[in-house]
Amino acid sequence: MSERNWPDSNMFWQDKRVIVTGGAGFLGSFVVEKLAARGAAEIIVPRSAEYDLTQLAAVQRLLADTTRQGRPVDMVIHLAAKVGGIGANRENPATFFYDNLMMGAQLMHKCYLWQVPKFVAIGTVCAYPKYAPIPFREEDLWNGYPEETNAPYGLAKKMMLVQSQTYRAQYGYNSIFLLPVNLYGPRDNFDLETSHVIPALIRKCLEAKARGDDHMTAWGDGSPTREFLYVADAAEGILLAAERYNDSQPVNLGSAFEISIRELLETIAAVTGFTGEIRWDTSKPNGQPRRKLDTSRAKALFGFEATRPFAEGLRETVDWWEGESER
Image (cartoon, rainbow, N blue to C red; front, side, top):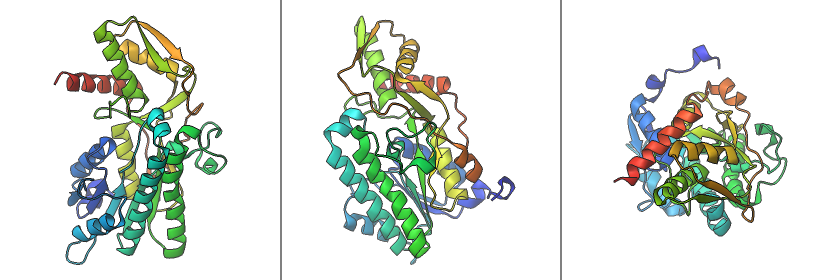
């Protein structure tokens, strides 16, 4: 479909009732805000205390509770996930595998049975092989095993791609599968036990500065590279795909901006005002050597391109956390 034939966003959503799993979380909160701004008719955010999506009965109850006059919701955007950084993945590989696998497989299956018209599955860059050629192209997803520290999580999420493709082939069910790269931005998880790299490093720098430390320690040797996508850009990409894309071929969502962990930490130290020495603990794992996505498919298929410059997004993230810390 060419750009001139893409639907108007506000017109598309005005009669849509949408479940956003994980809608109270980091990425989900931005997706919900953008849905509201687009005029979605109803946005349903199930909470885990009421609907444990690892349990089939809870999935069934959620779809029953959101059916109106015999009509199910128009779309499910599945963002809910058990996630964490390298440390959390190493300590909880079985939990990360089981919870993510069960949530995705059961929810998509039940959406098909309830005839929910569209299912938007959110995967992860962790699904890519450890040594995939740079930039990561969707065609390379099956050409090797993922990086070991987060393979259980990555593979569990990747099963939604298999499910999407097989359900489309056998049942004609309309589901899509998106692969966002590492996200960052305001409202991220800053818990040092479970956070990803950017919030973890921001918090470590600010706390080291507040204590007057003359150094701080970071994991690995700083050589791996990562691509980061601002969370509001990711939310926009997800909604453009929801509006415009109807196929089961996987699609990357990224920024095409790659930076080494060493340079990232030096940048965060400068933004936060930490002037001490940075020491690298090489006894800790580096994780995947490089991550950078080919983002051409998203642009071609539904017109998505990231817009937030990294320096600007990082500054906003630091400012948000400083504000939260002062409360």
